Length: 169
Image (cartoon, rainbow, N blue to C red; front, side):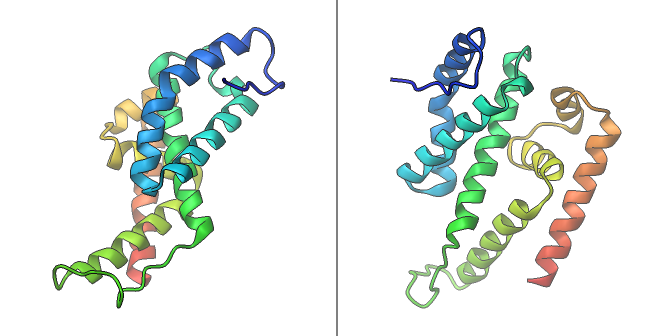
């Protein structure tokens, strides 16, 4: 049974329910791929829908592609926030390392996740949509309904911030 928060108005409940039913499966898969834990993935997706319910005006009247784009960014952001909040560490002495370079790649991957999670929301959204989801900067501008130059600037700033963060690690 789907629990719908009471701050949605009566006209929004059917639309919210449709958005939930159409998107919950792939959102769980994405969160699970990031978190590597089904219960954490379910928590992240639940947080996404609670956020959506409390900020429903952002998606009201938007097309399906725009809603999916917003949910993609939201589920990745919530998943990365969950990782950051639990501050998991890997003891490289106890981990099974199959190749000599794996230690470096593990540390770089952890640092990249932290760096992406630390980006300002606008930069993080552009970075995730472009680098992870493969959207062009022009497509992102259309999805976000902003000028191409704003998206390009957020992309440049995100890349610069990530480079500075990773150079310091």
